[in-house]
Image 1 (cartoon, protein in one colour):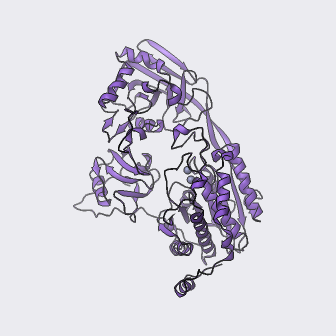
Image 2 (tube, helix red, strand yellow):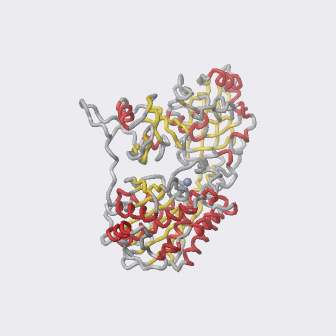
Image 3 (cartoon, helix red, strand yellow):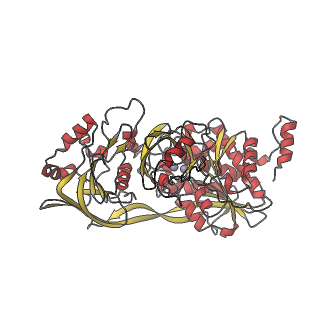
Length: 602
Ligand SMILES: [Zn+2]
Ligand SMILES: [Zn+2]
């Protein structure tokens, strides 16, 4: 069914009555959407963690729904496509940590004496001088740098959990110290300063270790932080402090009182960290069904159905790890819309074949969609377009963000029309790269659209619950996706793929000045904010390596306030490749500072 733009325009101008539409679209309803979300985000689902039985149950549910609409299984007669993910990392018993102080050596045993938290390679064996690096924190506000006065390069660092003055609630909402108190952040800071490894100890204000660290036992998941990170009990490092004439409790008090780092090199101390890891894999399943069209070409409509489970990894509320992270918006909303769209299409015979895909492993790094693209249900040449939905349940002011519009010249008109017909305002971005599943398709040269209703403070927290989903607005988004998919499926010619280039810096070159070093953000030119909002952050770029991402708003760069794109361009040019620059962004209204190491532009 093609809705013609001109006919539509005439209808719209000629009468205020609703445009004539497919009757099928009426089957996409808010109450049905909420019903799906409510089930997928229920307590029973325990957050649909990758590798959990509850996620399997969710997959079965999705397959049953797709089947009930009369759709055919997408994977050679099967609704499921299995692939393996790492769900746990086990360590061989020869893994060990040895702390040497002068002539004495203290060998710590796996799990009883130390707990692996992070790793670089599967096997690592490092040996180095030991430095104490406080909390392993660098912030601009307040100005505080645990790495000042020490050379961490090639060393193994002893770092405390948490942050200085933790018990004082920040009155201004500027929470940089707390934001940097995560173990991931400490590991990243250590790496950024050239350290080889990190030994984490609990800071003296958290005498109860269980508040600060996971339990010292088997069955954790060491994170891939790019360097070995282990936790040890405080008693194991006390002799090192003594041999250096220092006292940990005193150091801790001094930092809190003066906000001055107390980092130092332990006298005559070395550590050896040896980790031999085996990653434990488990099969998870993409779910897929298709509706045969008139032609061989097909489009994929997708949404990931996995979430964070109990929040052991990637939670933004780490203290609530162990409680289900229901993921109602992320991304029960997207799969609910996927089901509704599939149901609406099931009454039709579209021009092109449509594959409906629910992906697993997205939260672990787009694993399901990447596997799907590498092992497509049909010949890869047949895949001509992809439409992804991730977090579509909470549009504000009827706004829907649509990324990837620049990946095909065919998209802009279809998206604008679809938004108008659906009573939504589409905020369009050209690039198709972002942290969701369409990225795998764009990378494979397939034109892709990404629907997203915006970030919120419940993102990746147990508070992302079904009752916060806006039924009426979700219905509009699902109907818009249906309209857009219907138009893409009916395009007379296969949509051409266009590689979206990073926009050039706005200020021209002057006086032979170079464009400055490479940072890797793609500014959102359309956003009217104080600062610079990132429409995207290039994969593998300096900005991405420092953890910056789309929707962050840049407000300070290397100590300079950034009000607009010109400020940013100017500030960037003042630096050289190789410089490490403190960059402050607003993320969900909160300030966060990271160190970005600038690179050379290619
Ligand atoms: Zn998501
Ligand atoms: Zn997520």
